[in-house]
Image (cartoon, rainbow, N blue to C red; front, side, top):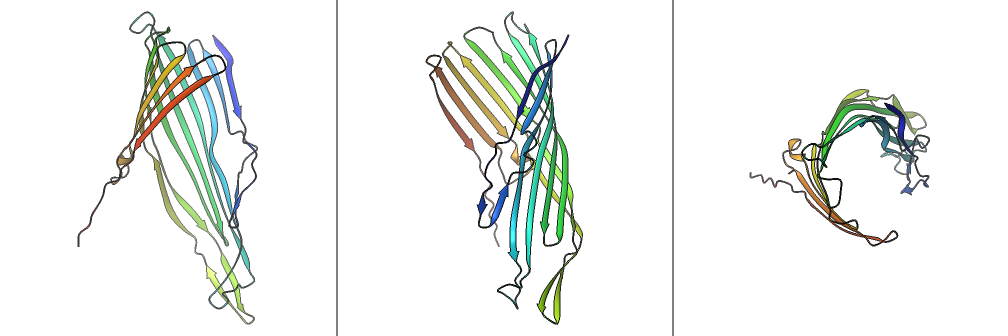
Length: 275
């Protein structure tokens, strides 16, 4: 049996005043789009979800900036502005399925997967040059969660793997000429030649292990350890190991206290050169 839908979520951006730092304006863009939206369908015990999110969006506005030259260090009277836009969005397809009574009569194994399609749009305007690049890549993640029993004391363990993203694409640069009047009877022309360059970036793989233990109705202890595989992309950087733990105690329906710890190890190889 299919239920339409079992859950729908939508989150909009908060309206903020655009800050200015030393003449540079920082603006949020695409505020008419929701920050995130998702839809989940139930097909028996199987769950199928689809969603989108704005991971990042910004606009930097530099200007107006007065043109100066060696001959006219105080300004030529001509002005230009520079603008930089970055938009990152992700669309996701999510599946989850619980398996009951795997090893005992009261346990449960949940399996989940997520397929992500990432879009990055970058545009920069400088003088009369326009720099544009569009990236598109796919990543995936998968996880297992095992619940030993559905009653107190409750114990769960989980493992989660996130496949990294590798972005690589050419950047198209196009432009004409900027003409600056140096003297009434002459001019100097600065030419920006159209060209193509390549830009590459990556987000490394990540593996996480989690543990949750609830001995009573009021006490819960959780811990997580993860490894980010930086070294597989860059030899002079060690993998990053992160550990976090949290204790939550519920005194009553109104008061809950918690305490946590977070540790991380991010080291670099030291490379010495001799001449």
